[in-house]
Length: 163
Figure 1 (cartoon, rainbow, N blue to C red):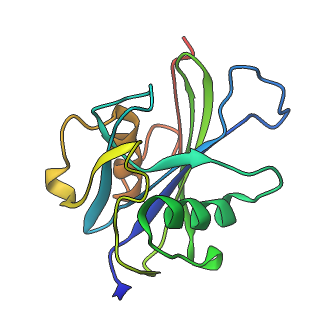
Figure 2 (cartoon, rainbow, N blue to C red; figure 1 turned 60 degrees about the horizontal axis):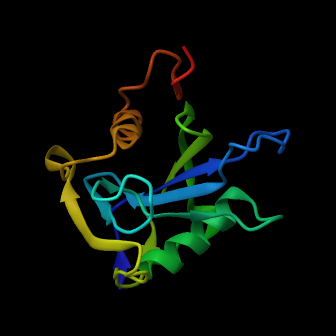
Figure 3 (cartoon, rainbow, N blue to C red; figure 1 turned 135 degrees about the vertical axis):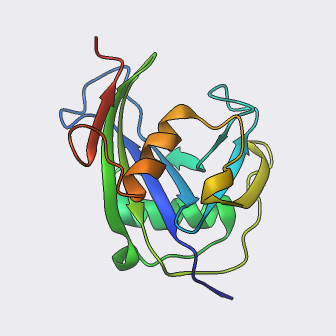
């Protein structure tokens, strides 16, 4: 089944030096555009019970776009070709770890969405952009605003937790 809604990727990657012990290499993928694909985190130890974008880890040597396509397939069963992703925004966040987030979007995907990792996710659905689920992980709201063209102070770059 071909889709016309807009999948979006958030890639959380280790800093360029690769030596930050507190950094993470995760990616979150959801569907943003006219509607959003969100999942409720479950049993992960991070933001459990909150709606966010599906997440996972990059494989060593894998570029962000290939990883986005692989993770979307592994988490939701949806297929996006690497060349079909477009950049949305970047975030540099500091929580209990250092995170660099890269968001991508596309208007082309195929497949039937489903929960492929039920031990990490207990909800998966499309939501209208004006009625996103609650509680929604805060940083996801920033990415949604970027996609809508309501960018942070520095355009397509946002940071938090550094002061």
